[in-house]
Amino acid sequence: MLQTAHQDSPNATQRVAGNAPFEIKPAQADGKIFSYRRGIVLTHGLTDSPYFMRALGEFFAAQGFVVMAILLPGHGTQPGDLLKVHRDEWAQTLAYAVRCMAQQVDEIYFC
Image (cartoon, rainbow, N blue to C red):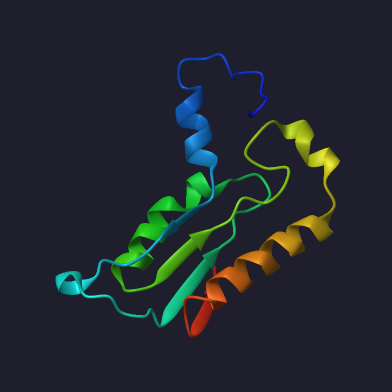
């Protein structure tokens, strides 16, 4: 369970869901199963979370990309959590996303 100063507020569930990592796959024509060719891994900025990448992800998915937005450790909760992580954890998270994306697509792009 996410521990924040606002966890008891009425919008806490929406806030947690908005900050969560996500994956969007492009729509499949006529319900046919096909392999995806291109994927994009979205990485948010220092003061952001995946929430700020959702519209961009939806745009890329509409263009035929598989989209994965990651949540960097220490982000999406409370500012003090950034003091508890090392940049190596961010690199490991990105490497994990690339490995996952490589199982689905032939080409990977970063944004």
